[in-house]
Image (cartoon, rainbow, N blue to C red; front, side, top):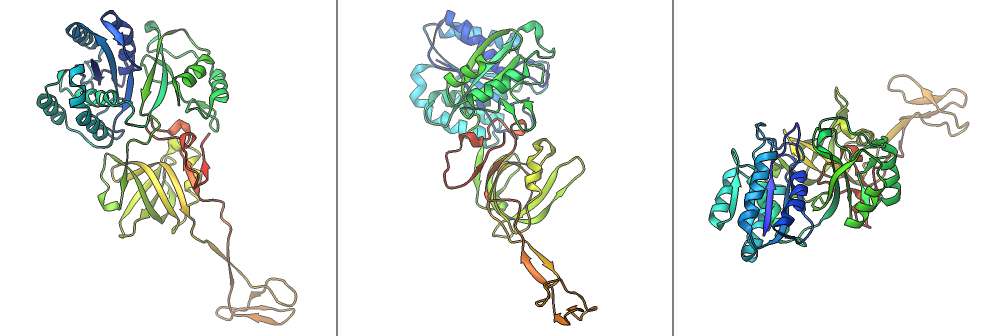
Length: 428
């Protein structure tokens, strides 16, 4: 059977992946775990999410499904942060006999849960219509992610995937400052990048795979295979680990992005790839956020932002000028596109003007007075206007990304990019 779980954490603590890791061990009392657990990140713009908007699924071979369901629901009731308003757990249980019937429906549901905005009633109606065993708590919003995670497990090869090694803290340490040797994470990165990514941010000298919240996660290493993430984790020196688990995930895949033909179809709480010309020069606002506008072929405009957490990426954005052709990837909230990646496709020419040179002595002429052009007093030569030159820009076409410290879970890092038709500028 497949078990999907979501929304057991809160902003103050717990983690749905930790519950998944616990169940991996505990459910072996009732059967055999058949494959790696799955972790799926859902639409990152949903305002009522807790932290990472992640759901998990497990696959178990068992002869006592009723005992499994009872065990899972009891653990949710024990560990979920029910006191938090945003925490609304959901669990879904799919029997093997229903795999083929439910596979196309739930795979489609997964795509929608990552890209679109799904109402709770939509998930509940689907569960009722398909006859799926489930348990929702409070308003049951977690049923959305639980169904989506089951969709991923039903078709594990039908979507781009990566892996994450998640190490968990001993329970008595939850909520305290994590004790880690930061240099060991840089060592792990040196030994395994680009097969792993977002372990550290070299430019900003930050460890980015260690969370700062009160949840049970000690660190998470992301990469291309279970072997490489385990190798990277072996370099880490830190406080004792209670347990770890390796998940198959949709992290680092750009699964959340929708193609946008024009700005008119852009909607809040969705993520897009969007092409346009820069129509307003970048402006730095109070707080360090950099904002500019792009225009599409139909004349539609949208503001685009490199927010302060993107750090050095903002220096790149400040070099854009009106007329530059760009392809942006990012999420839209409050009518503004939050940039995750930018492909600079074509640069607009930029010109400067200088006083003309004297053709005799080679020195720059001086103004002869308003409206009278320019002259060289020594050689008595004249010119009517300034000379315009195209300037070389300190920017080149290519694909750029925000630094690891600002990267979203779903955004595909350039370390994974296979394109050969464009120059890549990975952020390290």
